[in-house]
Amino acid sequence: MFEIDVGVPSRRPSVLAVDDEPGILSALKRMFRKEEIDLFTAGSGPEALAFLAENEVDCVISDMRMPEMDGAQLLEQVRNLAPQTVRILLTGHADTASTIAAINQGQVSRYVHKPWNDNELVLVVREGLQTKWLAQERDRLQELTRTQKEELARLNAELEDRVRARTAELAQTNSFLELAHKDLRTTFVNAVKSFSTLIELRSPAIAGHGKRVADLARAIAARLGLSPSDQQDILFAALLHDIGKIGLADADLDRSWAQLDLPARKRLQSHPHKGAAALMGLAELKHAASFIKAHHERWDGTGYPLGLEGEEIPVGARIIAICEDFDELQLGLLTGARATAEQARGVVARGAGKRYDPRLIELFEAVLDDPSWASDRGRFVTTDQLRPGMQLARDLHAANGVLLLAAGFKLDDTMIRQLRDFEATERKTMQVAVLDAQAQAALAGLAQAPEAAPGVAAHAEHAAPPPRPGAAPEQPAPAEPAVGTLPPEQQAELIRKALERDVREARPIVPGRDD
Image (cartoon, rainbow, N blue to C red; front, side):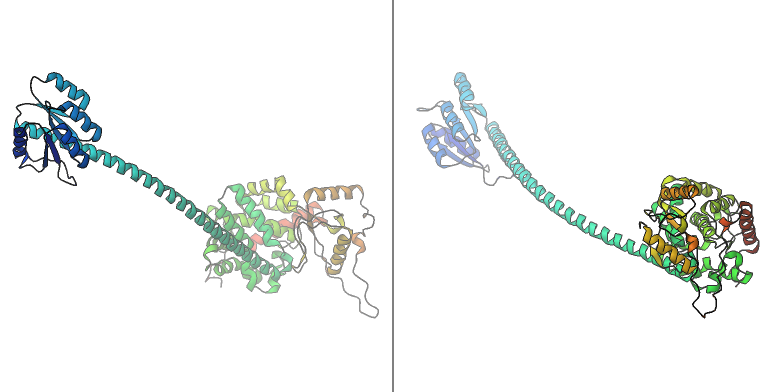
């Protein structure tokens, strides 16, 4: 028995046998009786077409010679009615011409000579049914593929829409997080600046000192090519480099280094270690704390608190050391006498290789020579040199640290007069930072016309007010020495001796040994 393998069809295959001889039809029935197919028979072409009009079959086996309608004509009609039907023609040897017509018109799948071989005919039917089923399966899979592609395209479009929507949501959320993080960072930076201001309130003489040191340190760090995060650590350390001084006595803070005795200097030398310890618990300030601890170390190893030397000193600490001394020289905190910016620059530059890293000194001078830096920071002038229209380059603080005028303020006659009156009342010389070009113009004007500008009283006129009648005369406060008032050779000698004394009397403090 030959089984007809047609894959896994949804129903049994059906075959229609057409012949005008009943014996032929009976023989075909016997041959396919044991096969897994449904066999139907018809005695003529019209009868077969009537059957096909109401029933679906998979294969039509037709004899060639039949009355009314021959096999070629029948199979042509079958092709028109059901193109997917397998068409097999039974023909004799003498029907060659008719066979050719059947092939051309009916497009038969196979033709079999009479008398046929049963096994051969079964195989022909089997192959035909397999071919038909494969064609149907192909069409089904193609249709399924087309449908799935359309569904996939639709799902992809929906997915893209969802992805776009989700991406927009994530972008919005990310922007909110970035904004929140920016606000948090801003709050943190402002907190650091506030701590820096609190330090300076302890010692009014250093008002604005931390910010000036921080600005210059960050500029040097940027020129050195350090990463933004390293620059920020240096900025924080510069703002807070004196935080360890909060616990010191006022007497130790109000005097310059040159005026301190040895016990007071030892107390002051503890502030880097105390400052670093105060910030130890803040992860964001971990690196800044290490810079604060080492910012009084010296390139030649004679600094404190650990006596580090050269590259052992963190680069942030080396930068801050330069910037701090540059500003403190101008404030008179090292020698007891104020130096001009040019004098302070010269003193710092001569410390290259001894107190400071020579490479960083080169960058320090490059920053000061940069026109954009000079323009941004301004130049210090006295109140005598102020002129209407000048614009403040930095915040102006009183000696007690109170903010008088914010950077960017444009001066007029009234404000200049008030500043001079305030200076006379406080008996403290004020240094006002104005935009550099304006300062140069003012200095040039003073060189040509030393008299005070009309309508603005000269600074010398603002002496202390006369004592009230019957009151004891007020003793004038000792004038703060100003380096700029001395001859050049005396200026250099005063600063040199103070710094030599600084080196000679300072030594590393080892915790546990010098407590």
